[in-house]
Image 1: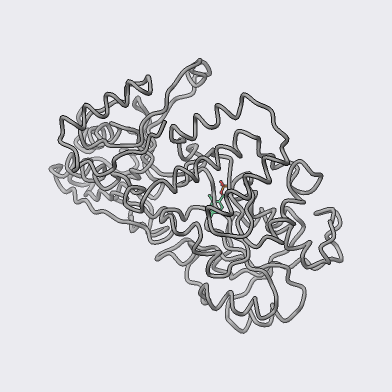
Image 2: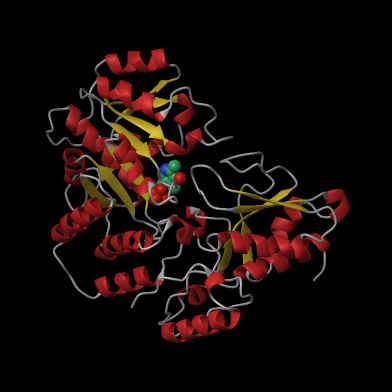
Length: 433
Ligand SMILES: *Cc1c(COP(=O)(O)O)cnc(C)c1O
């Protein structure tokens, strides 16, 4: 059953739209909460079985933040959920599944080799292990135990250092930090580098990483002059869909994506894409072997779910991928715009999380409530709402927030939740019930 959504609601009359959504709801055996005709969203998947969140007493939240791992990031679309369900019912030979899934993904994503990994973080570890092996005669190495005496430097710009460096350290590799082009050339000439790491979103305006001096093309050119493979971390950088082949197309040897962010696959899945000889080496270090990736197991359900998620992404156009995010943001903006002192603004970060975000700016001396009080109220009421963590923050990750700004990430909202979020923010800002 195809559940691709006619994204252009304008093609539908309102009545036809409601007829379409209610027949969809009937087909799915679930009634999506539709508070507004604007809420054309990815449909809610069929639900059956015991509600373990309820059983365990875990609050379900409204995710007005975005694809944050701490908030369990994305929910899978129905075709992915049903693919996962079916895969769960049959054993297969894991190696067969890994190989065929890799070939299918490589073909669909226009690269030589692909592996489904345990998230982008797992992909970075396997990429590093592959590059260490590549630089040390391709022979398998016990990492990190036997990393001493091997080539093991990973070259990174200082402005590209981040928490995911741990995924590199796990192999026993060490980071060589560079700032200027001269530093970079010197580090490449030393002969001990196995890989370079480029944090794609570090080039974001106002990015967390500050300003790096070396851009993608130059970075690649210099490393390749010294035969050093380049890895790029593009974990959160889909949409646009074309980014899935842009960086391999540019010549990056390995590219990591998170599977459970914008791609909306299983939250613990990811992709390592790139040159076949390197993805093959990465595979040698992967589960179920005995390498550094043994603890980064990806089960059959996640492998199949990741492939189904890529099929889901590729069934969209760039516009339909963005769905009705703009409409959701407009709806919420319209619900708060008459609150004294409120000004709204829409921003689309350039690289990571490249989707519309709503900024709601207000003057606490007029509203009588602070950003912190609004955040706490939204969190404490039921259903609990999480705003984007850039709320009340200085400009960051392409989002020009400040102390008196609420940031609403609309892309992970479920049908009807845009109206709930709008109503609840309005109530919080006006101190009404
Ligand atoms: C989210 C993220 C990761 C980790 O992705 P997982 O799929 O959660 O492992 C790595 N790098 C960047 C830049 C990210 O945004």
